[in-house]
Structure formats: C-alpha cells, structure tokens
Amino acid sequence: MSEVRSFVVPPSGGRLLRGPVGGPTILKATVDETAGTLTVLETEVAPLQGPPLHLHRREDEFWYILAGDFRFRADDRILTAPQGSFVFVPRGTRHCFQNVGSAIGRVLVGFTPGGMERFFEAHAELPPGPVDPEVYRAIADRSFMVVAGPPLAEESV
Image 1 (spheres, rainbow, N blue to C red):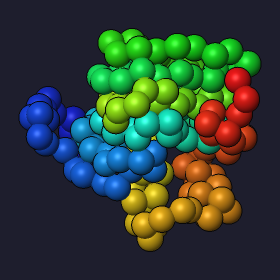
Image 2: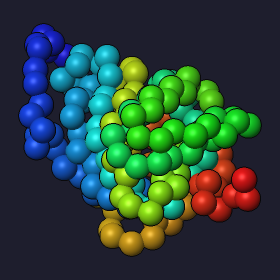
Image 3: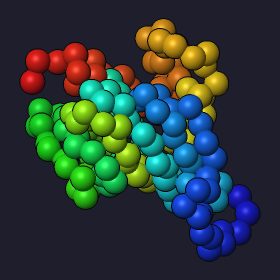
Image 4: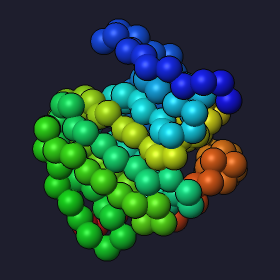
C-alpha cells in the first residue's frame, strides 16, 4: 500500500454504489485510502428494511444514525437507536438492524480494520431486484462475513 495521506471527502463526495438495504451507498473511506485501517460509508435504508442477521469474522462495525429511527439485534439483545445514536458491535457478534421509521433513514457505517467495501462493491454489481440467498452468502463469505439468520423484519421481536 502507498503512503497514507490526510484527506477530506466533501458532503457530495465519495463513490456511489447501489446499496444492499434499499438505497444508495456512498463509499467515503476505503482500505486503500486508509492503509487498511478502516472503511467508512454512508447508506440510505428504506423504511422497514435492513440486512439479514450476520457476523463479521475480522471487522468491528459501528454506525452513527444521521436520520431515522433504527433498532439493532446484537446477539440476543435488541437495541434502540434513534437519530443521533452511535452503535458499536465487536467482531464475532451476530447482528442486524432495521429502519423502523416511515421515512428513509441515513446511516454512517464504519468497519475496522478496513476492507468491507469489497462486499458492497460486489453486491452493487448484481442485477437489480431480489438477490438469490446463495449468491448473497457467497459474496458475504468472500468478505469474511457469515449470514446467520433472517433480517429483523422477518423476526417476531
């Protein structure tokens, strides 16, 4: 990797991808830009949407809720996270989240160490529409992620 340099990503900056939870994802900082330290992205989450229950084998993950009202599952705990909340989940924790509001939510998401952008990039290359669960699992596996269950929307919590 090349030398790490300070940088600023302006409000409209970053690399736009089709996101996996109902809205666009903007990569703000990648593994290459941070010499492997972290990955940061901003994503929109449609009402009642969220990813399936999963865990990361090598990354810790954090979220800052920019807009909306969310709930998170972290192993057997349900956490509420309204706008302005910060959520942290250590690697190896089964987790998922759901936008429980009626409007699009926006979340700043980070992973440390970096590299999880590879999952979002691979997902964005899939054809629009529902994703075959086995294809999703294969992309996740290549990104050191394990799908462990359904999204919160499909649970009775």
